[in-house]
Length: 82
Image (cartoon, rainbow, N blue to C red; front, top):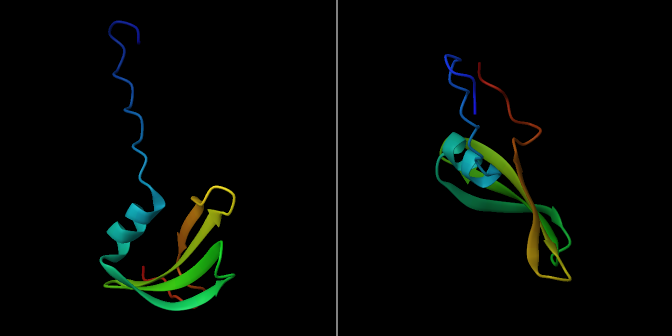
């Protein structure tokens, strides 16, 4: 609640999950080459997208089988366009 006559507070930022943010920025993707991982609980793959490439890393908690990490990053060799 805010004081009468005070400006409206800024709305809370909406959470956008990393996978959705990567998809919005890069367009549709298909899975490319596997880059790293143990083949059981972790993997890093190259995603070949309409507007660039993304390295996706996922980890699964072996005790629960549930996703414990998902991250998306530009490949080290990617160039940034201003």
